[in-house]
Amino acid sequence: MGKKDTPLISVIIPTKNASKYIKEALTCLLEQDLSFEVVVVDSSTDGTATIAKELGAVVIETPANDVEARNIGLERATGEYIMFLDGDDVVNDGAIATMLSELTNDTALQMVSCMVKDFFSPELTKDELGDVAIKAEPYYGLLTGAVMIRRGLFDTLGKFDVNFSAAGGVAWLLKAQDSGVKHKKLPIVATNRRIHTSNYGRTQRDNEFKNYANILRGRIKRG
Image (cartoon, rainbow, N blue to C red; front, side, top):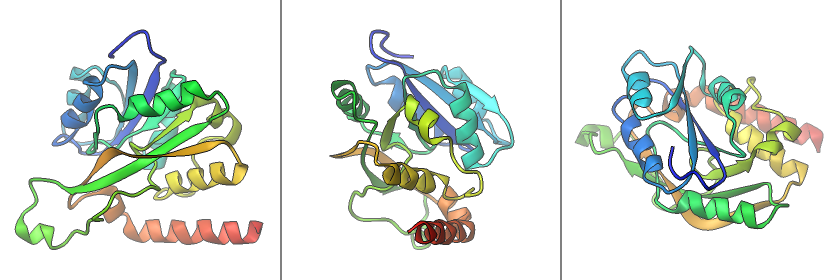
């Protein structure tokens, strides 16, 4: 996909019933003048996989949760650089090129992170808008769509911990932070995070809170 004379970026996208959004998510990648390998790990019962295949993605259909899907995607990915994206989010034009430039210009740099900005999905009704929360300002801290990582860092730190099925990305980012690898935050918004009634963090909220508590306890024990 895309330009052939740039380093290959593997974009791993776990999906579950994202047929309403996956075309926009993939199109925003295809429109950027870079070399992409898009790996969609799909557990859907709708037409998500078919749409992704039509747009040129490698599709692995398996009943995996979000963290398992990321690990499966990593096993398939061949790119020098790794990104993760949700199947309902939209990457801003130029953001990935900016992250790539930072990594290629500094070989000691292992990962770069940007901000994300929430937006309400247009199909939400007035009642549904009242039931979902949104952050008014861009923010750091999410893995999906906002972090680019050298592939070799996963060889060093390992893949995602499947014990944290609803917070595996947070656990891995904290592990990277604790390891002392060189990391740079960029003051740009890389991705627009779609807020709707079936966001993974919304449907898995109780499990997510339990995961966060376990992550915190583990960090306290390690001192």
